Length: 274
Image 1 (cartoon, rainbow, N blue to C red):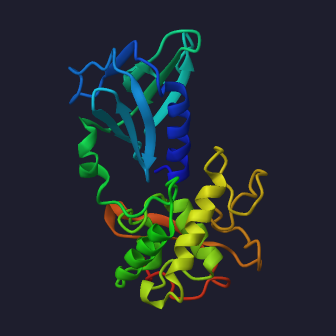
Image 2: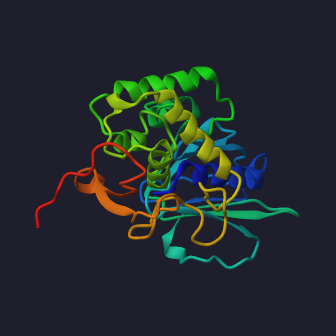
């Protein structure tokens, strides 16, 4: 599932292409919304809230989308060939004129058209958005308080809980834990400074918010961008110990987590039966 910075960048690009423009084509190909036509409406803004995208229209409605595991938005110039099969397109928003653009949403399983005043119904449960342009000390304290309240949770799972703070995905979960020097299985109650966890997560997301490349090491070279994420079996960049990969979470919520058993203190994963 895309990280919050990927969704944020998607919103920025869609906003630059569509905001203030009247739609000459507004197709919703999702089974639930196929009878709705957005043609003639003007896009006011496209914003991200955590991993949610909100396209606000001048008729008082918002088109909500969530990328999940395989969804994406593409931008094309007029007449440009789509890079994905047309049968996977769920939304087509097009403008005309000298700078005409086409925004196509592919494999958008979660799509909803709702009154803008009701957006909270879909995003109101989220914790503070780490990439909120109006981020403040109040949000920092709020996110730290929500993290502390998840006292029975392992840190790695709490970081993925969008109700605690919105925007962290599996990549940043692994990298935040490594940079903090604690294992993903560390109980939240063992954290010395929950505020530092929030600040670090926000710093990493901000660092990559304006580019498609995601680096937590400060390097963009191939194979040099991450400390532990997707580096199972490779040597730790700090101590040389082999990076380990284990699953964390239950059932469909289980995700691969990467960690250095030497650099990261705290409990390890539960042993699994052969």
